[in-house]
Image (cartoon, rainbow, N blue to C red; front, side):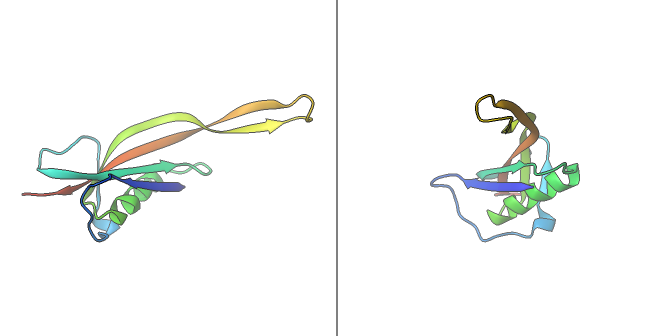
Length: 109
């Protein structure tokens, strides 16, 4: 699993939080919160849902998040495999699941 975090420019910076305490949400919460950045989880192999969620937790914790809201979960082209001789190559897409989460930190009760 490849995970990449992208904190928002000019956004708040917090020390890392405990990944065990980072919640995975499917909708934005009603509690007051601030957006810290985005977490991108891309496959290497055939990961499980639990592995995706752990990758999102780890990325959110890196930014000091309390939760990560899943905002994108789709199959898309993540690479290309080229086979055959150099004079007649064949390119085949590599499709994988890509999940993007919004890291948030609660500001109130």
